[in-house]
Each structure stands twice: as C-alpha cells, then as structure tokens.
Image (cartoon, rainbow over all chains, first blue to last red; front, side, top):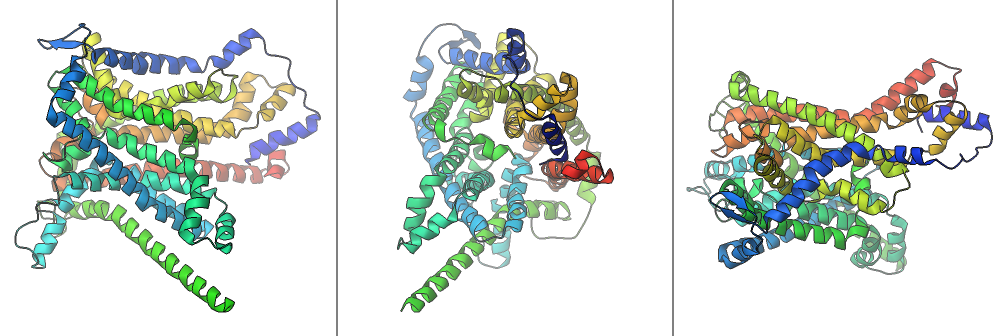
Length: 308
Length: 289
C-alpha cells in the first residue's frame, strides 16, 4: 500500500467509527454519471454512429460511384456468388484458426515454464522480455520477415553461402504458410502474457496432489489445471483470433497473391469505391468476432491483462 | 521399489524442466532475431539491407535523418500521438470513474460497449469512419480525422488501465477525508490523484505508444499525410532499404524507452514517494510507509 493510503488509513483510525453517508440526492446521482459525458460524445459520434452507417451501407448500393439508399441484400449475395471471395473467406477462417491454435500451443508450454520453473524474482523481467517485441513497431515486425525470408533474405543468403542451394528458395515467402508463420510471431506475446496471468493464479499444489494420486502429468494438466485457467485460455484465444481475422498488413506484405485474406478484400473494395460491398464483407468478419465475444462473454478477463 | 520410483519421477521432472527451458530459449530467439537483424543491417554498408555485411557505417542514419519525407512523417506522428494521448487520457479517465463507482444498471453491457472498439477488428473502425467522414459529411481526410479514429481505438485501453486501479481503491479513504472536512477538490487532490495518478500516466503512455504504432485505422483516415508507419509501409512495399532499417532502429529505441517508462512509472512513483515520506520522519506518511 502506498504511503498516502497509509496516511488516510491513519486518519480513518483517528476518526473512529465510520458512518454511512445519507442517501445520495438526485443531483449527485447525475453527477456520478457525468464522467461518461466525454466518452458518450466520442464513441457515440465517432464509433457507434459510423458503425450504424456501415451496417446501413451493407444493405445499400453503389451506383456511378455514389452510395444510393436502395435497400437490398445484393452486397451479401454478390460476395457469396463469387467463388474466389468465398474461397478467400474460408481460407481466412482456417488460417486464423490454425494461427490461433499454433500461437496458444507455443505460448502455453512457455507460460507453464515461466510460472513453474522460474523463481519469482525472475518471472517479471523474463515476461517483460517477451512483451518488448510487442512494443516495437507492428509494421516493422512484419517487414523484418521479408528481410529474413525474402529471395535476397538472410535465410537464402546464408544457405547460398554454405553452398546448400544455388537458387534462392521462393517458397519461404508469399504464400499462406508465410502469413500464418508471421501471424504466430506477431501475436505470441499477447498469448504468453494472458496465459501467464492465468497460470500465476493457479494453485500448483492441486496439480501435485493429482499426480500424487496417480494421474499422469498430461492428464493432471488437462483435467485439473485447464478447467481452472479456462477464462485465461479463452481470453487468449479470442484476443489472438479476432485481430487475425481482420488482418490486412501481414497478408499484404508477406502473403503475395496466394496469401490473400478477407481484410485485403475489404480494403480493395473500399479503394475501388465499392463501399457497400466492402461494408458487407467487413460486417461479415465483425459478425464472427461479435458472435465469439457473446459466446464467451463470461470468460473474458480483460482487466487481468491490461490492468497492471 | 518406492525409492526407485521416486528416482524415476525426479529424473522425469528434470527432463521436462530442461525441455521446457530449451523451448523458452527457442522462443526468445524467435522473438528477437528479426529485430536484432533489422538493427544489424542498419549499420551494414551493403545497400540491399541483407547479408553479407560489407562494412560498418552510420551512413543510413545520416540519410534517414536528412530525408525530408521522414522528418515530415515523424512530425505528423508525434502531433497525432500527442493529440490522441490528450483526448484518450481525459475521456478514458473520466469514464473509468462512473464505470467502477456508480450504481449502474447493465454494468456488463456498458463495460462491453466501452471496450468494443478494441474487441472488433480495427479494420472496421477505419472503413466505418472513412465512410462517415467522406460520404456522409463530405469532409476532407486530414490529420484530425486520423486523430479521431485513433482516439476511439486508444481510449478503451486507458479506461481498462484506470478502472482496474480504481477497483482496488478503498472508498472508505475518501469518505474518511470527507468526514474530516475535505471538499471534493481536496479529496481529489490528496486522496484520489496520488492513488490513481500512476495508472493515469501509464494509460497515457500506453495511448501514446499505441498511436505511434497504429497502422490500419490511420491508413484509411489520414488522407494525403504520412505518419511514420504509413511512410514505412509505402517504402517496404518495394523492399526494405537500409534507410528504413535505420528508421526502424531509432523507432524501436524510442518506443522501447517510452514503454519501459510506462512500465516503470508506478514503481518509480512509489519509490519517489517513499523516499519523500522517509525524508520527513514523524509525519504519519513516514510511519505508515
């Protein structure tokens, strides 16, 4: 506890018994809510209103580069009628799912190691080390992989220098796997941080007890530990899955023609002034994100992650 | 038999431990090699920004620092980041109070609406505001439109940081001060601010770094201007140059310093306050600390 808190605490003790204040009058009730004023303006005017507009857009039409208020389902129908778009949509879903599973799968053993085998005084610095890349430019973290995996990149130059290859390997970049790989790199720190927060609260004696009673380690982790850290795992899944679903930059920079994701389609439509079609696709992604949030709303633990 | 079993278990444990430790080392390498290479190549004389290393130079830094476009982008980035920080910090801190303290109906729903901008893909904020500004209001895209978009995105983070600090805040402290005759201003100045101050500063620095790094919303809303990420994006589309690597290295150094500051602020404030308190022995603060 900070010293000023201590100061006030001393004051409380000096004051003796604390009486509950008389019931607040209406004006002070309204005063309590005054803090919401600015955020109502900001979010109402520049988040929810545009959101309503974009929803309306998805049911309108563009005629001669102008948005016309003809209510229709054509934008959604059009999207579903073009095989390339549907394929991209499905590919986006499995790429996102796979990248999420890989990110969590890589982060879990790491978080387990950090909470179980590292002494308390080292845990924070080592965790900080994981978050540092998270704080360096997102754009540069993607771009750095071009330097590494590109035709003239580090991997190819090194293999050439070693005489192992004579032509640069081209499959390292500009395909779906490169996108997934870079996405895992990008979102790992978040997963690690969230899983660490969850495991930090876990009582390891329970795991020990389960194993003492004869449970094999993996069974003990699966049956005893996972149910208890479920909210943390779900939070990690959601916060890796949703941003990846709307990724634009990574497929744009390392995906090439083959690695296109749905976010690229949205941007292309908007750049091409096909606002209403772009809006429909953007809302399709958002609908999936919102569905996930509603489904798992009880398990989200935002404060644990950001509130420190 | 039992001893033998225990031996097996102990050996098993050591193997698991070593395996997980190796895993962690791999992960740290995975995380830092790309960044380290960027930095390395920024000092490499080779103008293709890759191996082999043909000599060490600061030339790319000179180029980057004297590049007018980069200077302009840095200036725009800083201006945007400062404005976003001011808006989000004020709006977010104000919202955190009623969120934590009022008797709210639908608290869960309100909380969700306030964090929604960071729960949905940023792409949607970008396209929604783009349509809103340009098609509905016929506004020119400018630095200000980008500031608004980024502020929508950064504010929820400030709310979360400040709210979580407020939740651990004992309201009896304020009530006691009020019983002892402190007015609203004094309660704010002597009780509330010292307790949530570090969280507000951390939230502000958080907003600042988020803004500096924000890409997708800015791409849609900034029109003809360039922030640093947008400038770098236009460059790396055609391959990374050593100049970009130099900018990257400086950017990493800068954002690291700010982030470390954000991380260290609460601790530093606490240390400073403790020192102040012990410097005045005999005060109740000194005794309490």
